[in-house]
Amino acid sequence: MIFLKKDSEIEILKEGGKILSEILKKVKEKSKPNVSTLFLSNYAFKLIKETGGKPSFLNFRPNFARKPFPAPICISINEVIVHGVPKKNIILKEGDLVSLDCGICYKKLYTDMAITFGIGKISKKARDLIKSTKEALKNAIKICRKGNRIGDISFEIERTIKKYRFFPICELCGHGVGYYVHEDPFIPNCGSRHSGEILKNGMVIAIEPMASLGTSKIISNKDDEFLTADRSLSSHFEATIAITKSLPIIITPLIE
View 1: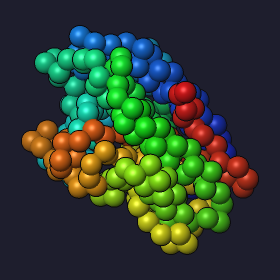
View 2: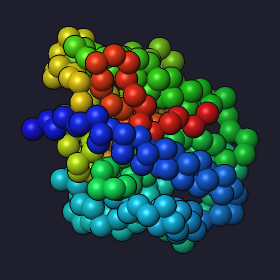
View 3: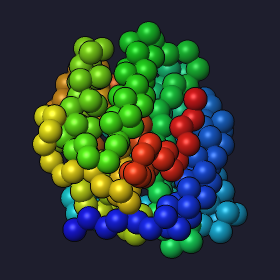
């Protein structure tokens, strides 16, 4: 079931989304060589609590997971696409690709956002992979107009990533958000134009393109993390978007 949000609720979501974007920006600034992902997770938790919000990922169990997620933020390194579990012994190093994925509950409404960036000097291919995924998100946002369909968003994500000759992660997807961490509809990263649910005024969705250097195939591990099957580098961006009568509203401001 798709829940349409009221204008007043979208205003609250914008407040929460701005807070979430600022939190990810600050965590990114702390992401340097020799820093553990557990340190970054604890820092994110501190920032969330200071805003009066709640970490929506902590102890949340998605349908696919065998156990609840143990942290307030997902920190995925290199071949880990999403749901990376922060740990004391995972230490950032020069050349790593880092994806931060975080959700908060602010005034009882949920927002979700992710970014990917490099630690220090990274390869040109890695830079291009990040560029392709971020561009896919921006292009998909342009499609978020009343009357278009979910498949139009999925098609644009797939088209943009393949334009760079990288591989979209078709088995993972975005989702509705707002009243709950995950809501209908699902937003696939691959698809056909003019297919799927019609976008309606009041829909709030989390679009999250994901791509890898070498394959669209994924595997999971004992921590319910998703990795590229060939262990090639991956990239992930996500934004919460509200569908309106005119232009889409970017609930979680993009970090440039």
